[in-house]
Image 1 (cartoon, rainbow, N blue to C red):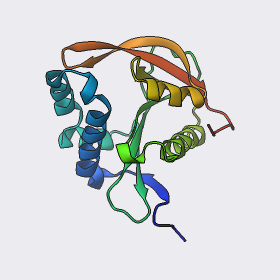
Image 2: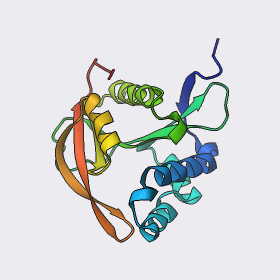
Image 3: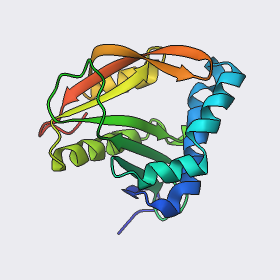
Image 4: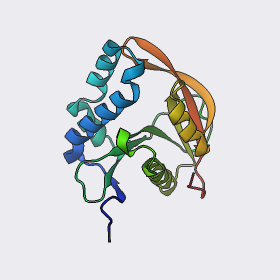
Length: 183
């Protein structure tokens, strides 16, 4: 029996485009609005989280989105996006897949839901024949860096993340996909 507060996840479909766009924008704003210029944030979210853009991402077979819900709730509290087909030059592991996004509603942080979602992403990578998971994370996002390090990700390089007019430094982190899928 599913308890009312137990997290569950499912793959996102095109029917989820609107709710995913809203969640993606909200969680991105929650994570970064306080430490970035408003105009840069507006420029980024306008392009990155439009409903048409999210529909295009959902239709692209290189992308996989997981939505996380609490119990029987119909509104997701978090999501992850994994992407194949392009890899940062610093990533030298074989059969790579990118963990492009992993975001939770502020109220869900610290409840083990991010760990559940990460575990499911690693399981997806493993079951689809990937041997390396990589990601880019803003150098100033201490909470995310700590989370990824606990999961065995190591810094292997860097790249520029363009937030509006602001060129920010992202650290490229990677880890092997292995049978060890827990924090």
